[in-house]
Length: 318
Ligand code: SF4
Ligand code: SF4
Image: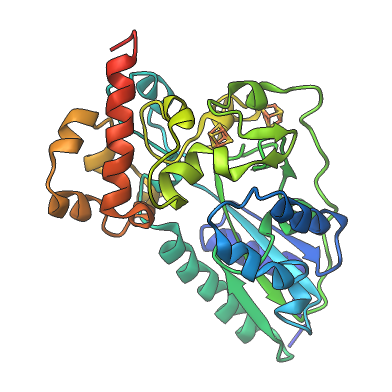
């Protein structure tokens, strides 16, 4: 049996539905070092799990000492819904695109497991590996950049020059010595559109996100009340926020996925705030079942809807 190559892994990844795949060295990349400073500034807010896992996040070799490479993947979740236009309507609930369809953790974990199972069959030598979809103690954007998937934009998202930034990242850390890709280089240039468009000024510097101000954090991760000063910035966001990606020129003609897994669920597709807020807990729970929206729980969603309804009443457009 021939040695397993990067090219063969990439071809298999495509066959399994991943839109991009690259290989990064499992090395001490300089960008990994910023994370501790970001935590020290308090930008993680209540996401205490990030502090607890900081040591492991510093280098993938802390979670897999034999690691030599990181196989990074990107999967387009953008669909052909004209959502930007709809979300300008203050009466409609804005749900971040990544949560429109099925929970990506489940869908991608299955595909990543299939890729890893294939690699084990195809490799003449046994190897160690760990597969992660977002929830692992891995700074996956840094490895995606070093795998040539895309650069980390000033909006902190990984941007692929052909696909845009509406992509899920997932990776396999392994002990195989594979050919690695050249890192992606920064193409933001002098653009600052995302920093200017952020409704809560959460992008405090290029590529630096203060999560405690970010609508995504406030509507998903935060438990308890949303601070008064930040409520107007929530606008009609019921779950998450895409503004800094919507304004990005690299998403002007983004890739579109026809994958049934990511298509918007009827309950959230252009839903209006008033009807959503009138739904029973059971109905809301049912509408969130199997979706990444479960993370906010019914209580969190009701809190967000209440803030969005207040904003709607204040809006000159309503
Ligand atoms: S997701 Fe929204 S609130 Fe967060 S940084 Fe981007 S534009 Fe700002
Ligand atoms: S909006 Fe401009 S600065 Fe922000 S990520 Fe996109 S290209 Fe970079």
